[in-house]
Structures are given as structure tokens and as C-alpha cells.
Length: 327
Image 1 (tube, rainbow, N blue to C red):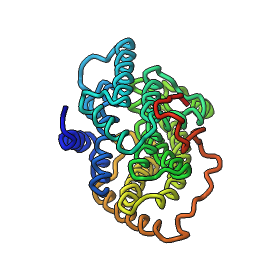
Image 2 (cartoon, helix red, strand yellow):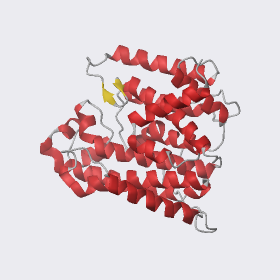
Image 3 (cartoon, rainbow, N blue to C red):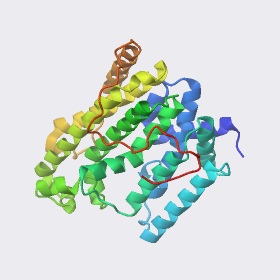
Image 4 (spheres, rainbow, N blue to C red):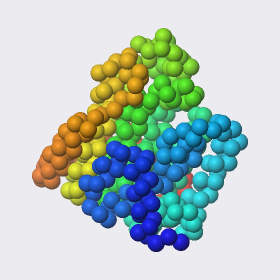
């Protein structure tokens, strides 16, 4: 088995190759938090790649896996994840998960919730309503925010819900940015009732002739994302200063991606929406200000989350960390 330093080093290499933005934000963490973030990300990245038949987020170039192969890959991921949670991991990315879960006392429910999110993709589930979209966003991103919050030392119910809100906001932004690319491979995450209201079906999203109608639905989704970004901002005060700075910076940069999509309108999908280096530096600077402000008594008082999607048991760990009930 590899030593911890080797596991961290491998995890860092994966994040540096697989996500420049996340790698940049992670540098703001203190060393111990950064190492745990690297290890959690390594497992998440591996799972995502297996489900999408990719390598570090990029297509492998081979034939598309069959449904049976996708089902088998998911079953293997779940088995390996459960083995890691039981302290029986062998492959480095699962050793990384095993160590993070043990070090930060993360309930076993949460890694398995991410696997449930991947199952939604493998099963080809398409959300009928906004609540369905938000549930999906929680399972593939919000729960990662929850685990990251625990790594950073946050444990209260409100803090964990705000962390989930940030992950949900990130995923809503991803959906808005990648809606056309997703549609070309048969994945539709915009609510079906919203599409119907705009005279659209899922198959229309990849057709440039429907771009104006689709844009109106995407902007509506970005409006929802903004409510989750706003809620998440109020949770930054629960974090230690360096973690608060990192999270606030990542929030700013990702929210700005949504801003790029808004400004481009119907041309937003001609090229992938990105935030340039100058924009990222602005986001980091604004994040520093937000982190400093969050440390002032009274400035980080929680705002209401009324109306936001909420995990029914978030913030209350199961009686046994080995219990798992899908939400």
C-alpha cells in the first residue's frame, strides 16, 4: 500500500490535470485541509471518469460503452466505495477516500449519495420538475460540498445546508454552461415542465434553431442558481479564514461563468463559457474581502433558506456511519 504522502501526491496530480480552477482554489487552503481536499477530489474525479468513460474529464476516443457495461462499471464503483468505507481499500483513489472519511469522521451516507447521483445518470433519468433537477444537483455536487465542509471543520446543520447550496449552485451553472454538449449525448437536466412551457423537448436542445427559446429556460435556471449562491455566501462565516477565502473565491469564479452565459445569450454555446485569468484574480480578491467580512461579528448572521431544496436529514449524522439510506 502506498504511504499517505504518495497518496496525497497522486491526488494532487489528478486535480492539477483534471481541474485547473479547483486546483487554484485549493492552494488557498491550509496544508492539512488542502491534502484532504486533494484526496476527496481524486476519488470524485475517478468515479466521474468511470461513469462518463473519460480520463480526467476528456473523452477516451473509443466506442461508447453499452448500457450493460455502464451498469457494471457503476456496480464496481459502489462495491469499491463500500470497501473503502469499511477500511478495505486497495486502489490509490479509494485509499484516498478511506483516509479522508476516517480522518474527518464523514458519515458513510455521503459518499454513497454521490454514487446514487451517478446512478441517476447511468439510468438516464431526466428531471420532470425543478425539484428533480435540484435533487440531482445535490447528489452529484451538493453532497461533495457537504463533505468538503466537514473537511474544513463545519458540522452544524445550517453550515452543511449552506455547503450543499454551493454545490447545487455549481451544478446548476454546469448544466447551463453545458446544456448543448449534454443534449448531444442524450443528457437533459433542464426540467421537462420548463421545456414544455417554452415549446421545447429535450431533443431540441442540440438544435440551433431552438437556441432563443432554450436561452430563456437557461436564464431562468441561472436565476435559481443565484438564490443558492446567495445562501452559500451566508455560510462562509462558519469556516476558518483560509477555507473561507478559498470557498468564497471558488464561488465568485463559478458564479461568473453563469454571468458569461447570460451575457452571450443565444451564442453562449458557440464556445465553452470560461472565466479568464484576470477574472479569476478578481474573484480571488473579492473572495478575500468576503472572508475578512465573514469574520466580523454580526456580518455573517444566517439568512433564511426558505424555499430552497433541503436534504431531509442533513446535519444529523446517522446512528451508525455504516448506515445508508438513499434520499
